[in-house]
Image (cartoon, rainbow, N blue to C red):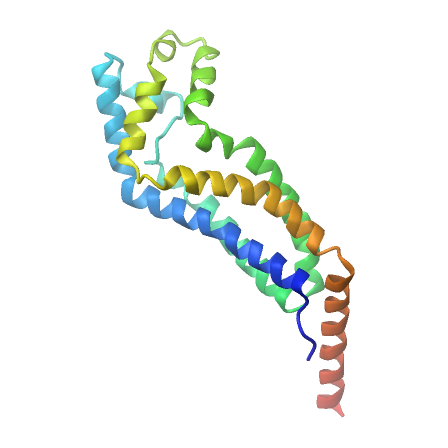
Length: 200
């Protein structure tokens, strides 16, 4: 049995670590999502804006549990890829090279909206052409949601952004180094030798 090289251990560790902020985000939605949405609706009422306006534009502050299957799927894929890479699977390494570029794009396009919520919403509301959205005090709205959420959530979102982008790039690079390739070849050879022994 060959020892796993540091490159593979680090890559698999990064994959498991990347799954963690997605798991914490799911917990936050289940535990605090309804409270955050209620706080947002109360702030809209205070501003004299119909509470239905956000739903009409598909905007939710954590209460939309229909989105939970996406982070769940990401978590499962990351865990499976980490286990496959630790096992020296060619399939795991190949799928990692396919999945992590997708994760980088998702991190760049989607996650900044969670990290820089106020500026993203302000820009979106200004360009919406909806007079009701344009008169919302976005800073106060986001502040109401944030007060209902745990104080550590911004750090989780920031960590998620770093891990899905820079972390994914590092995983790709680590699985390309010679030691990672040798690990895959050695595990394949081990399995072949084990099969030959059993059949012999």
